[in-house]
Length: 383
DNA sequence: CTTCCTTTGAAGGAC
DNA sequence: GTCCTTCAAAGGAAG
Image (cartoon, rainbow, N blue to C red):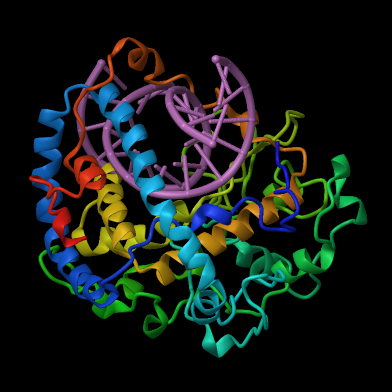
């Protein structure tokens, strides 16, 4: 059940989000991240093999991950206070203004929206896009001239929420404000990822199809099951058709219209993406292009490492974006609960996990995260 | 065709 | 308050 964090206005419990940053060595991180790309692929390939061999008990691995992840969070939570103290400055520098997010932001005192100062182009319409990330599809493609207005009865359930002004801001973004990230504007512009050992041959941006060729909503989707009762479509709404879960959420081909509108079932509303998911969504294509990898598990490992290598400011962009994403999601679907989607993915390895005892194997990455020991297989020392 | 893998973070339930 | 589980994306691999 979505709930406003008590008292905090629109913070939505994002208080402790700024936790996975590194305290020091930002400069080094930058440099080291360059090395990432060079080593990512090779590391990953070897480590994946080795890890899979050593992690014969994925269940245990997962358990361990949970715990260690928590420990990791706790560890970094200690920095939270510090970061909060420097909050204003941090967000001021990191968020001169979102190109597409116009919610009044407590972290952006001035709320300046100077488009020229945007460094954050988190929204990259690589494959499918995501709302907030995917806020632009709303605006650019379908809602431009007259942004929709939220009905005033948005706050069902008696939840007091910021009102339509904010939302409409989401959908009234200027053309090209987002999604067409100029290569020079990439938030980790190209030099950060040298085209090295991954066999990367051409700039990432050029390897990506034009975002405009990826309409995330067909018209019917918007007018059909994907249309929220507020009149605002949201890519998180997935038609309740069979294979809703696999990657066809936002990039349906308008030419092959799924004719499912007769189904009166409730559309599936997906969870809002968290910061890391947003980061993955943006960077996946880049990693794929650089490393000529396609396997998502491998890509995600690389992205996970890069995520940890980000500076706090860089991560803050995504935390902030995710916060707004949740906020928008909550406004659009006040009665939605993450619990609604439980069981939709078919019970997976849970049963297996049950009988596997903890204390199983963990990935080198986990070990590293926990105690800082150098990972033998994954070169996490770069972090 | 379905599920798993793999990542981090958020949410919710149980205790 | 802590712990645990599930889901969010994604696409190849495996069953």
